[in-house]
Image (cartoon, rainbow, N blue to C red):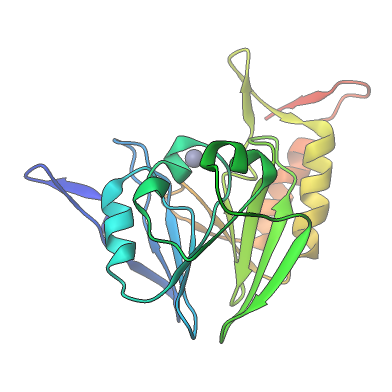
Amino acid sequence: MCYNRYISGVIVTELLEISENIYRIPASESPLSADVGVIRGESGFWIYDIGSLKENADYINRLGAPVRAVLSHFHRDHIGALQYLNAERIFLGANTYKYAGRGETVKGDLYLSDGIELHIFELPSSHSKGSLGLEAGGFAFLGDGVYSLEKGGRAVYNATLLKDCIEKLKTLRAEKFLLSHEPKFVFSKDEVIGGLERVYSKRIKNEAYIEA
Ligand SMILES: [Zn+2]
């Protein structure tokens, strides 16, 4: 396994292959930076998040082809290095736009084709309002979208958002779900939806939140 790791004080950034034309720069814990998804299209690269490290942006900039970025949500560990990235287009949710200050806001679903079919979609998320996912080549990058939220020191899900999240995930064609910060990273669609359904089954009537 290779990570954004420090070697004599230098961060080494490496690309791991997930599938043909689909890669990632793995997340790091210290400093905290999310996974960067990289998809090779016919006319350039499509990335999902940029993480918080300038080294990630430098690496992507050196790929030498136009880059379009999809941002999952506004948290620093996902978009912190955006200022260093040379992106031709940036797709983000309305809430992320407030932090990024630029880009194209995605509402609902957006389908694009670049030698590979791309599907950018709004993902109802307890973790962060206005999250986006990216589906391509049988994989769905979900960022932190299926994670809970910290509330008063407890990990909880918003019951309504969790229900909507599960419904949205079921409509995806991808059979593999990619979850940021998880060393395993690649999960089956069934295990992710199954896990969320188990949480949802603990819902207490008239309670807005569910314990994770
Ligand atoms: Zn994160």
